[in-house]
Image 1 (tube, helix red, strand yellow):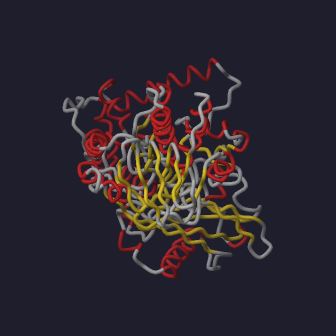
Image 2 (cartoon, rainbow, N blue to C red):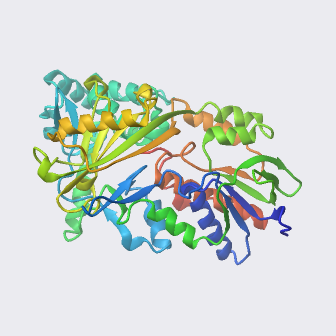
Image 3 (spheres, rainbow, N blue to C red):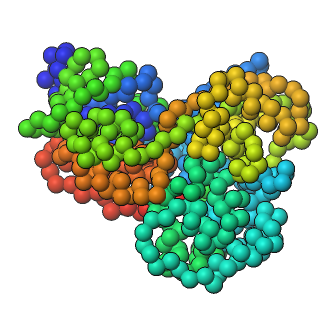
Length: 498
């Protein structure tokens, strides 16, 4: 029934980011597979679909087209959910791997960029010689990291911080020169607070199985080499993928393909359970009744909605911490630079004292991001490490970025353009104990309601899609009055981000 002020649906999805849009797509697919109609609506409080998946095309002064990312610029390829969804919605041919050449990532150490050792997976080396000869570490730091080969495994199964884990296995230099800049640059997080079990459970599993991280990584490398030898013509897959037209191609295509009622500039103000499901009051004065609800919003927003109906779930979600971050994209002609930049980018440890946390050379990382003869770069600021930097005004953030990049690139010319993106209170922090927080929240959720998104079971885009898919499967089953179980195929990866 739809009388203009009241509408009935089977499923209402709150939040039009990638988690919510994925939930809408999979709800449509699961209902079709069940050969049952399922009415779905998607509510988005802002004026744009896609959440943090934001891509701008900039035509500047006749230089050509630049593809500028405002949020994430890529997805971890080993997690299958982006690729699977892209192929389902007709975007498979648009998937784009990173450039084969120039894959190096650098750490800023003693006023110069030092490449990460070859064969390194975050903080775990799979090749001993490059790691032990890397100028990234002092001789003492290398020897301390080598103790990982003989140190005993931890017997306590409780959670610990990434810093505690890395320091315990590889030593303090590995924390300061690997874990800290990687987490600050990629996740806007601090290793001293970040939960190992919620973000990198694979490393704990390696320790438990092989005792040594180095031993585990070397064995993994040998197994990969054997598989490649058995398929000599097969090209090694890229570690990260994007789309030829930028990451926003994904939500844009989802909006085109999803058969649901969508409403932008529409906020959910209140919700209450009914005998058959839920009654929702929207910011435009309308009410919606539905059998199932998927809250694909950040944890603080979900807590506010849940507080009147479940103080237990709300109290748990309120414990999830957020930080703010910003990024600035800029472009220079190669002819204006001392020399073209190498690799995909540079990460700055906190000991470097830089006003920026990291820089990505976007035009090196993916083809087609800048016209020939131009360099497109992006700086990252704020986060958990430098919250005071985010509080500066827009011109100051742009000035910080320009000055740092002019020094790095060896130029006194201003950039062709700057594009600033702010993400206030938008970076969830998976602090130690995050899995316990989520267990409490899930235990307190009322019937017929599910959570999905970066605040909960995985920060990266692949995990957001997985969560949307799982929530959709449960919501469709409830709407149709049928039992549901999450597909075993969607438990192929642990909750965390690694």
